[in-house]
Amino acid sequence: MKKRIVVNVGVTETRLAVQEGSLLTELYVERMRRRSIVGNIYKGVVTNVLPGMQAAFVDVGLGKDAFLYAGDYTTNLGDDDAAALPEADDPPDVDVQGEADADVETDPEARPPAVHHQPIEEMLHRGQEILVQVSKESLGTKGARITSFISLPGRYIVYMPQARHVGVSRRIHDEVERERLRGIVKTLRPPGGGFIVRTVAEGKGADELAADIELLGRLWSQIHGRFEAARAPARLHEEVDLTFRVVRDLFSPEVEEFLVDDRAAYEKCLGFATTLVPQLADRVTWYDSRTPIFDATGIEKEIEKALRRRVWLKSGGYIVIDHTEALIAIDVNTGKYVGKRDFEQTVLKINLEAVTEAVRQIRLRDLGGIIIIDFIDMERPEHREQVSAALRRALVDDKSRTNVLEISELGIVEMTRKRARQDLQSMFCAPCPTCRGSGVVRSDATLAAEMFRKIQAEAADGGGAEVVIRAHPDMARYLEGDEREGIERLEALVDKRIAVEAVAGFQREQYELAYRSP
Image 1 (cartoon, rainbow, N blue to C red):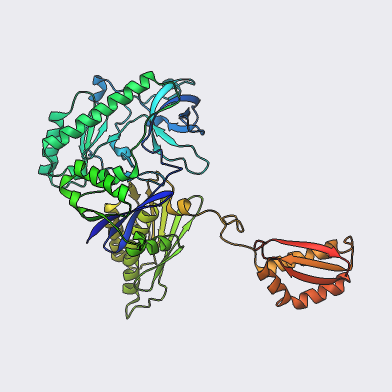
Image 2 (image 1 turned 135 degrees about the vertical axis):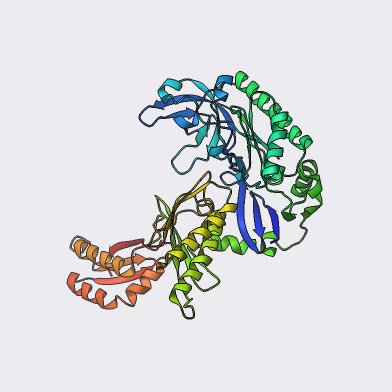
């Protein structure tokens, strides 16, 4: 399936899309006024230690204190500690991450485990200065999550200064190639550091890997030097911009086309590609047309669909995606599809189709935390196993860490997905000022009844012989039409004339009652 990267450079934001065929699978946005901090490295000051939560708050200069769990903190490991670190269990590859952008973040499984399991109050104290890296963007009222396990991504290698082991991406399946790469890195690596070999390193030689190791080693030395010199809180290292990360983390031989609609950004991407992946540089193309690039490639429509609650399947079924405070719920429905003969086969077909679309939407919308998928009930255990296996296969290409439990007899799957940034809905949308984010408003009948009760209660004290209801135009039409009989009964009860006025500037539930003489 043809894979391409499309970059749209706007006045206030840069958008990057990844398409597989005609389908949009990933979307990243970098806004000029608010760049991501995931991957940034800081010298911070501990402001509070919470033994009961085994966590600490750290001032890194972001305005809101960052949050550090005990399991995310360790001092630099000595040579004696290195023997306790595992060599096996190669970590998964790292790739583009970050809130509203595309920062690289190493999977937690790639971190060196804490060797000494000390309580946090024995490791940290208020006023202590520490070196940390942001692992999760600030979401809602929560501050950014940080870790002392530093990871520095390169094109082919991820360098972890506190580790001692060498890992190879699980996406490199050939055992001979895995051992070859591991052997090269073990030969090249300087003392005092661990490495992850990334998927794009497959087939590369010692020269390419050595250049990456040398570059990352110099970067770490610079960061360490800044830590010694800087006064906390201070930012010591900031992740590179989106155009560089695109080339470094997404541009691989599988990408057949790399379109950029801005001349300056095109020159930058071409320059980065020439340096990092010269064999692919001729695939970087400047899109020079009056038709907006996201419209021409069909991406704009895909983004609009990704913000909808309901997503239709080709068969006529559909899935519904609901966001709650605790979890994301995805419900599968038969919709217009009625099948041909066997009801069980009809259900299986829709569920299997829903698996593919649900996973695509999870990746595209960057949904995280707890996710519940409610498939249509399947009576046959083998059908449930088919759907469960299909879900696991579909998640193989997802670069965020996931954990999927077995499907229940009711067709419910519970899963978790690592969340490092805002989801698409939070990034592109704001709570409705009328419903205040609830998704519902009071019905016309409910509002009318409320108005009538207030008029009854206030009529005796209100001066004048006429009550004026000022309301939203839709509500005014409802009162003059469906509730005309109710208004007449109310007029008889309060012995006052009731008039209705439409006010275009009012919100849907807004209204005013005024009393005046005719």
